[in-house]
Image 1 (cartoon, rainbow, N blue to C red):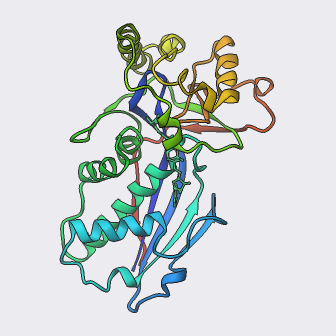
Image 2: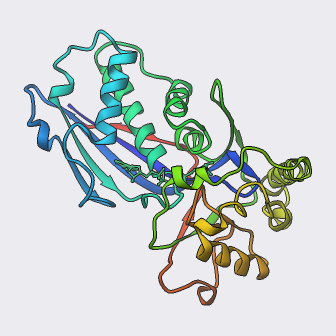
Image 3: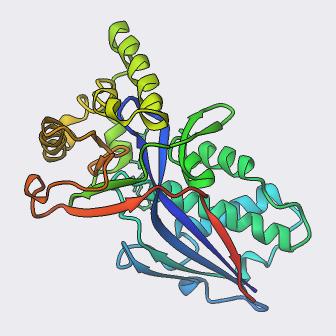
Length: 300
Ligand SMILES: Nc1ncnc2c1ncn2[C@@H]1O[C@H](COP(=O)(O)OP(=O)(O)O)[C@@H](O)[C@H]1O
Ligand SMILES: N[C@@H](CCOP(=O)(O)O)C(=O)O
């Protein structure tokens, strides 16, 4: 039996929505899980094409395989013990890694959703999308990338317990991701965020977060002002100086540009960006907002 899942890339924060806002993008990883009748070779049970194909493991230490096993054991304790040994996984990776486009959240969302499908086909209840969100944010610690990968669209999320709400992105259909050729580990980017900020910064950020919602729902003309934030990007400037220079240049040109997630990708809330403002080593990806979150397809 084969189960295929597509999971979207996501852009978290969107300026003032640090650890809470997220947007699902039209860039998808495809994961195909096969349940065999016999045990498969554990050293080659995963195949990867695309992003990081040369470096990711092909055995059960692969992130997605690991999470599938953990979720099956925790959520479906009656699963036959040999089932994990009979699984193989094909990954087609299109989401860039460690660029601020939610690749790790997508991988974990995909793994949990696949485990839910395996459980459902074995006669148990399928994991609800809400349960998938809770499990991902237990693993990631913040649900901002997980919520749009699970539900699609523009989301605002709260942790403990993880909950999220979809906000209609009426005014923005297309966005542009400017992806540098350097990577930044999310854990490193989080380590430079201070433990506390001045009250005036927090108050201004609340206003801009509310304005961002107004910008997406009703009036795109406020998006430039709404995305002018001081809660996280400035603290991380030294971690992604070229990206901040690009954000500054695009904003000076009137475009609502932010750092995507923990960076270093820059997200512009517009379908086109003048190539002359963008360094040659940066890849431009024009994409739409994904509205559905992960999607499951059963093969034979
Ligand atoms: N599809 C995937 N399969 C396996 N591991 C993945 C996958 N996507 C991401 N990862 C792991 O997560 C790391 C990137 O996570 P992170 O630094 O949080 O960046 P991102 O912003 O892309 O989520 C990768 O280096 C890899 O170890
Ligand atoms: N709110 C988080 C978002 C991390 O997103 P990622 O796509 O870079 O993993 C943060 O800013 O640290």
